[in-house]
Length: 371
Image 1 (cartoon, helix red, strand yellow):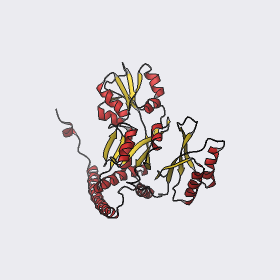
Image 2 (cartoon, helix red, strand yellow):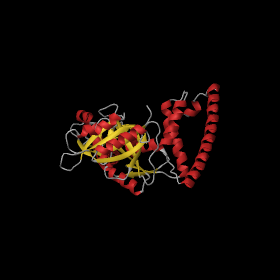
Image 3 (cartoon, rainbow, N blue to C red):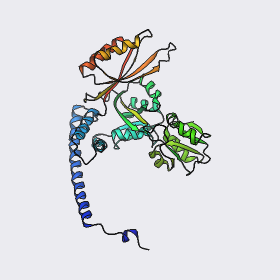
Image 4 (tube, one colour):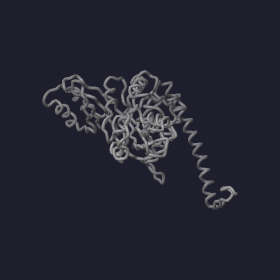
């Protein structure tokens, strides 16, 4: 029997010529990338002499924004950011290894968010839970931490918000991830599934599908979706809810793709670090300032808290409340503001807001994607 390669028709001359031109361009690209890497090494040496940090999120955001603005196609503008993040990640790794903590094990959406933000040239530090992510980042075992803070279906990730209250860490970046939940299992069948394992948020985000297709199966919460996939790989009677990366990582079949209730389900992640090891990002032109505040329990207190923002023309993009757990019906308010404290109107609004709050903490100021 002839081999497929032997029977295949030869490529047309025009196709061969185009392939040769692509190969030539690839060689040119590699040479240019190495020139960029050499320049990055020289920048790294200067930073060492000056005592500067390697990673500047606002600088990288400005570089990507400039490239997007200058893109004339046919390369899609949406493809520019991930390509250049990988290039910058590889160049950064030449200067110093970047250790990034996230909710593990391998295959979680948190890992995907970390790789999307920093690129793949990092030292991965998977953690058992959100508390550990905060801990290893605060102690210096990791340079940065990545935690989910908000989901478009289920709202805020309460544990992450609570941990912000008592940590020295602050936010230096954010990334948003389209979350596509899949039902995974060793066997290629929905029959005889005794339990579905996933993080509580994922179970909630897939509630309607589970009720319709697996109403008798136990919904068993675990530390992460990837942990659920790992356990499903060991026990054929259970299934897991996780992403495509976890399916590949643990050798599971995708029984049902995209079972989340909201087809546009997204999760927002915060990137954390310690202020003694990394300065706050400077203004990039499109920034967010995150706060947590509280006010005295009196009539009109929340209204008074919002007045300074209106007075100084500062827009609020998020407003969430969490119980203060004092037993006195008091609350902490988590607020995202548009702008950077280096901008006078934002600085004035923050100062006026601080004066009317019983508790005031800036969680971070960081660049966000330009619209």
